[in-house]
Length: 113
Length: 109
Image 1 (cartoon, each protein chain N blue to C red):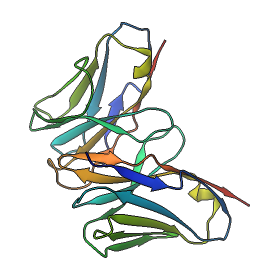
Image 2: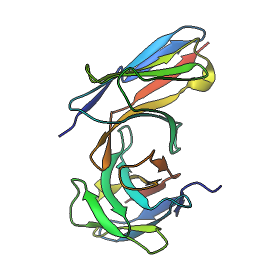
Image 3: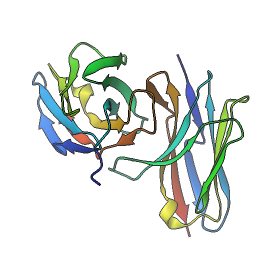
Image 4: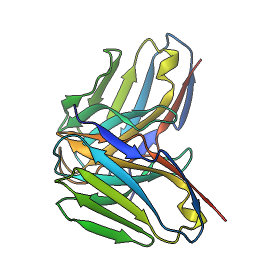
């Protein structure tokens, strides 16, 4: 069975641009969470979506937004990119909100110049 | 806000010896995870611990949970090179995971 997939794998942007990252959960999983992992640190929670609704939001500015589609895939959007947004962005899926292990995708490595 | 602390942050292991990584968390939680991350890669789930006294083992790794002490340990038996990676503990905090800073393990001959 396919695991969590993310695209693109790598991305280079300049300050002020916006970016869209994509995630497809494991088949049957209805909850998707996004995490930001800065080099040398543990992942930080950004958003959780379940049944296409935002169920939780971490301490990130409004430049970060996300959505979940009817097929449970998800997009993370970041506007007005800053150098500090350079990080590995991880998507995780689970069966339902608060249920079961969160399985992580390979991540999208974003570099902002 | 739930805090998760791991120690040590860096661990240089000698092949064949035993070591322990500690994970403390600040408030009650119903679930604790251990993940492994290889350089440049994503997180691989190792263990999920659900109750006080839970112990799980896989190969040379054994994880345990003491909910009263809010402490989990990851014990490595007879370290081998393949175990070189960064290990994270994470605790469920309502709908999200709160991670420790990670323990970077290097196994030397």
